[in-house]
Each structure stands twice: as C-alpha cells, then as structure tokens.
Image (cartoon, rainbow, N blue to C red; front, side, top):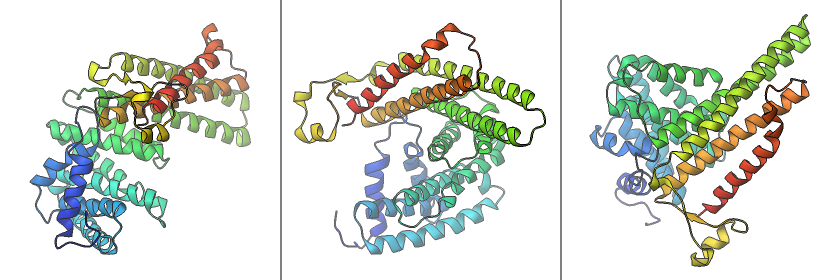
Length: 358
C-alpha cells in the first residue's frame, strides 16, 4: 500500500478496510456489526450518514496502519459531516427508525472506540455516547426492531458493542437494563446461534457484576446512615446469596454452551515442533499444547467466551469471599470445595487462551 496520498484516498481506505476487517467476518461465528456492514453500505446512498461514517472509520483504520497526515485530516472532516447528518436524520420521523441509521450509530461507536484506544488525547466521557444513542434508537423503533433478519442482527450487533463498552466500564446499569427490555419485548422468535448464545452469557455476567457492585454500594451507604443496620445487613446478605446462586447457575450455562459446540468450533491440538519459530516466540507453550481452529473468527469468539467464563468464576469468588466475611452460612456443603474448583477451572481456561495465541 503506498505511503503517499493517492488520487482516490477514500476508495483506497474503504478497500483496505472491507478486505481486512469486514469481508472475512463469518455471520455464524460473530455478532459484530462488521458482518452485515458491507451489504448495508453497498445499498446506502453515497451522501448518506452511513456512507460518511463508514468512510471516516475506514480512513481512521487505514491511518492507524499507514500513518499519513492527509488521511487524518480527511478522516476528521468526513466524521464531522457524518455526525451532522446523523443528528439531522434522528430528527426525521422515518429516518430515525431506519436500519441504516441504527447501523450508522454502531459505526460511529467503533470510530470513537478506536479513538479512545489509540488516540493520544481523548475524553473518555465521549466513549459511549454513540452506543447509548443506539440504545435510544432501539427503544424508539419499537416493533420495527423485530420485523426481519437484518433488524434482528442489528439488535445482536448493538448488544455486542454494548458488551464491548461495558468491558471498559463505561456503561451504567440503566443501559444494560434498557437493552434487556428491548430484547425481552420481542414480537417474533429470537435468533439462535453459537455466537449469539455466547453474547447472551456475557450479557448475563455484566448484569450480575453490576448487581454485586450495587449491593456493595447499598451496604456501604446504609452502614453510614441507616438506623437499622441489622435489617440492612440481612437484606444485603439475601441479595449477595442471590447473586452467588445466579453466578453458579451461569457457570453451569457456560459449561453447557461449551459442551454443545458444533464440530467446526472444536480446536485441534498440534505439535509445537510444526510451528514456525516466529509463532513459538510470540506464544506461551510451556505447559500446554498449541491448538488451531477452523478460522480466526471462531478462535476469537471462543477466547471471548473463555474471558466471560473467567469473569463468572471471579464473580463467584468475590461473592463467596464477601459472604464468608459477613458470616453468611452456605446452604450447600459443596460450596466448601469452591476455591479448589474455581482455581482448577481458571487454570484450564488460561491454558486454553495461551494455547490459541497464534
């Protein structure tokens, strides 16, 4: 790729972006908006908000790979145009409920996410403004969210971006609950799929993590001002036990998800001696045998799910420690074996992630 600005910089950037990041997205193995962006972009008008937002994102990605001041200047200008047109479309009664506008907000969210990660000066308060806009559009669209496959895939993609933002601790519980209401208000059958179910588990984890955080905050505030600390403590213990029970159930769901994986999702162990020296140098294989997958999308989805399960195990550990510190008696003798079980499972998951580094 040339390091100087070509006569058609936008086409160069778009070609680079779609070939590298979008056309290789398998819709069966990922919930990313990139899986459906090519078709929606191709069907959009060249001056539409979606076209502008996609071009800005493509220029940004291209600039990250091949720094060029002219690309950066063009990127910022087109992004500003996309924002202006998006705000205008939101005010329209028809455009505001369109699939294209919802996709536009997801593309803008990806742009801001890249800026937050790779930018030198960035206000993190801007990080989640577009995904919150996506949630507002979902609520505004109502029954139109469930009218066809594309609309459903946009819901799934919005949740995927929401989970990404939540991993960076930028989403308040209200945002998660707003999406939960949209998901639960479906007037048609919800889509199924391995990747979709994985995101469902990750979403459940996010809600439980926020519940545990809120429980700690409630107890802390009650201890400082409550005239009835005993009753407040009892309520907190009940909430804590409920969170722990839900977390253990979620761990079981993670195991069942993994056990039901189709053959194409299974990893295949390979001998370390068959790997290139560069791969060996970049990976950790001291205690595990390296594994390969059908494609990178599957490897990425599985590692994300492993991270989700690690989060579930961490939540169980935190809840157990908090219960023990408060003197809450376990209802099951098996809970005494939890530390050893959690440690063993954690080691397995970490080993599997290390084995899939290539």
